[in-house]
Length: 464
Image (cartoon, rainbow, N blue to C red; front, side, top):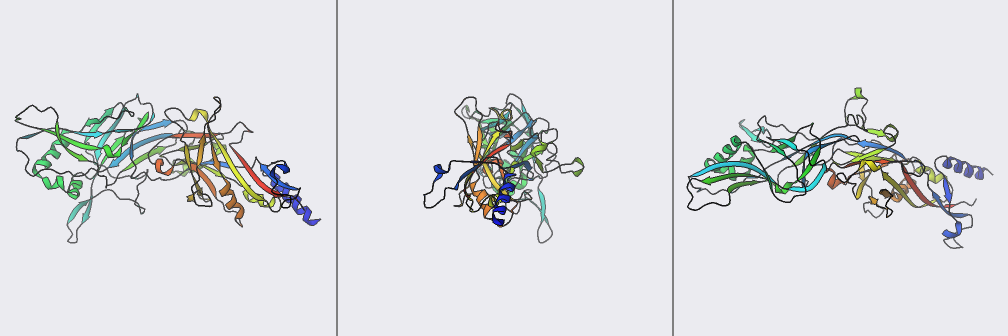
């Protein structure tokens, strides 16, 4: 009698956390000698999920193939401004240049890589500014200039990294972006800088040919985007950047049809990253990005404070967090409960994405602790990473959604002797997080108004 009471009590407690639909026992027979007629597979389709939006303080944006310039402003996440930092390489120059060469101009050459977000009919403007070198000291006390770039302990730079820029302006770009065009684009730099660089080529060839000396002369460059011009951001192919110094000879024996130039390519072995400034003020996320307790800021916002939505955005460190507080109580539901599978369906808010801000096909999933520290990428028992995958229904009136196999996570929770405090966090794939600004929000699905729909199949022995 006492044992039966405990089973019933456990059942009632579990029922307060989720409801169950019992499938037909005969449909799930595992063998008549293996399972009794009072045992079977249970579908638990209303297990409680607690959702929130998390802002990570920094994400890796160095050594990416795309440099971002410009910005974006939207009512969901707020204002984002992108300024890439990078270094140019020295170049090989002949030591016997003709004496009658004349400087013409200096330009930056680049190619778009096809990425954009926002309105590309609006003009993008940014300043080209050099970095200020740092001073080091030799053993004899004499000073020398060193690179201003300093990476973190892991060798990376982040969206929040910052370095001192000179007051000098090498140039100013004003352009209407054409991100789908594959041809080369150019914008002119200051002739003061160009003449100075040209003079180094003619009179100080070691500075031009030796990388360490050249990067003392030009330690690094940034395309500094204006903070209040946030209509569009575009991607520049990192490998396409170079500086060209055009020149001509005073006396040419024949007409010159193709301009001649000295070229300084981007330093492929050097340092580059995307600085991404972010402010959530005035958006759905309120003050999630503001480190100021007087503004009641928080790096995590429950969905109840964001109109029952959660948000994802690349570049800014905005992720959706899922906690399943009832997972431990599956063990108390009935004796010998065995998890078979668990899936979570997540539906994006229809008006939170568009043709110029498309949904990603795949979302990365991480396991985080109570303090939102990432403990690892979510993976199966065999060690393969598990992702949230976009599903596009064949019916024309059905919105796309994401599915996530939560079986591995729930299995780990059930096998733990105590409550782990772990959650799942979804967002832009790690390799892409530092080079795109795409955003969207998850909204309640039509089935019951829950933010996410979870389906759990478990084998339950209901015999006494």
